[in-house]
Length: 235
Picture: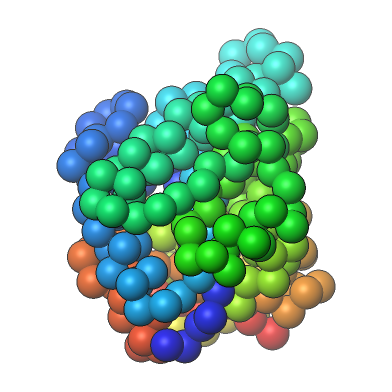
């Protein structure tokens, strides 16, 4: 295997499948099987899930809601998604631990870095919910931060497109995909990969990012095997 420990970032929208809102259980179960296949190869794995399929803080702010309040609501949405993914994984025999940056003792552990690393060493998949626990920070930033804290080898951002393009491929058919790109090029070109805080964290800690299509079965395994799937962001 190319990596010993990875952090997988899934957007909330990716859990919708073909729906316009909420959670598509069929899609979540497909992700669970793909994750299990890679985990069974001996790779230690942590996961951060967004909440945009349920609630998006930035959108709520634009409609007049207080930004901090809206962001906390978004963090709660991520925990709902994390619970759905945890249920899917455990239904196929994968042992998991859900940790939240906001205390919710009845449903998950509080985030404790050393405990998370111990779970990983014991071959459990650790799912991180509630972002960083702070407003004004995205789940992309949470993914970069947790990846650095647990000493992951790479951040894998699973999306609905097969990498980073020169423009939005759903809107511009002439857009072309990058196979490799540097952090600085992401800044300079204003590409919508992750927010700038997340990119900066990865750049400063020399943590590579791979953006790939998680919806295509088998892609996740190909990345674990080192195949050039998606777009690699590094120095």
